[in-house]
Length: 442
Image 1 (cartoon, rainbow, N blue to C red):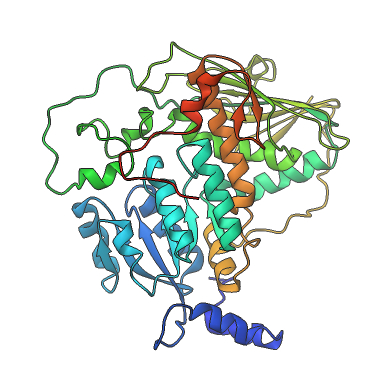
Image 2 (spheres, rainbow, N blue to C red):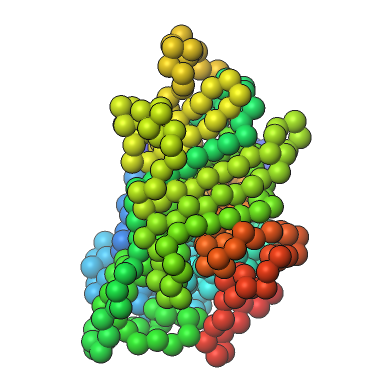
């Protein structure tokens, strides 16, 4: 890899800056009698699906910088399928047992959403750096606690919003912040994708012998196994996921959050089909009201999924520009910008026909996973751009959309109090109930 830096080279450079002794000792923490490893020792929790993708992305971006020393999954077949790639890695079904392995320095969590906070909090509190998939946790309360714990423990973190590392997002941020379309007071974010459930899940099916169902449920109050929950359909059920908004919101709302410096919304209103207590909806629309920031005006951010779209999708003819299935549209006083992961387009077209992009001010990423690896090697919590200090509030805001939808009312949000101030109905969705014996702690 062109940008690869092995650990030995890093320590040599650090020594030149007077940091070598401190860094070397940082990496030998908790390993009495063992020499410092030449690579970062990583444990993977959830080894297929997104976990498998993460492993491949680590290998692609940061080969030579890490060892996978532990693999953890509640499905024995998944462990058997990945284990031969890493014959020296120890295997586990229970992440709590895995964290007893002393040479684990960092943990990558790619479980279903309902287990994110538990794996992440335990890892942080035991002194490990953490990479966790979006949306970071399963409730606003969990996300806040994860964010605060990472800050207190001073660990290197990254949320799995890998699009943040792509060049197109960085160029859009530069264009918006250059003032090309003027002050922005409205953003429309839509995606046709839909994670929803519209019929009772199948029950009465025996738990497969390879699956540790009790461990998969983690802290969720006990419920019978259904083959409709696994391997990925858990996103369709409130007990384990948050529907399409929970799946995709962090990827797409990330861009306006970054470009406009959005903070915390003050009011959130959502609409969708009749709320079901167990199932995620076929579609939902959400309006987030963000306050002014300095000389930037207040912003109304609109979310649409499941085929719902803003009227401007037609008026701008986004289909012509291959932006019909997913887009983030910034509406400014001087023009409009529509983007997806790979491209952006300015409107009106004739006005921006000769547009010259502003100078690049945001450096290219070495890779989303490599940002985290290098941050861990430097023990620098600010190195990954989607560290929990940034991505925690982003994920909170995303899940507030599901809270508003399930509450059935526009909600007034007080982030300092972690409270919806205008209705008590939101409390059960902000803070979840767990099975006996499970507590988030402090």
